[in-house]
Image 1 (cartoon, rainbow, N blue to C red):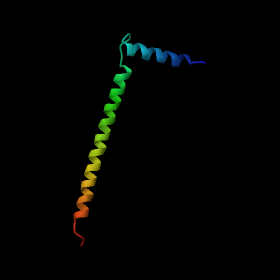
Image 2 (cartoon, rainbow, N blue to C red; image 1 turned 90 degrees about the horizontal axis):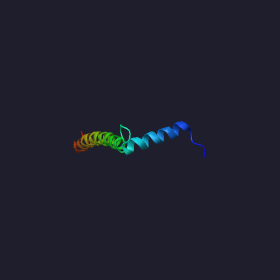
Image 3 (cartoon, one colour; image 1 turned 90 degrees about the vertical axis):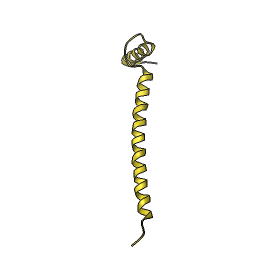
Length: 65
């Protein structure tokens, strides 16, 4: 099995960072940051959907002319 040298170098660098041998952001910290961004985006989408549902619920409650 052939592994491209750059791929191997990246794996070694990530492993050294994760083990604390080299300073930098660990894979776990990067994943936590990614999940934090996802939570923020989902909360924003949820707020938009709640506002939209309240608007349409008010429209349904309005009597017809």
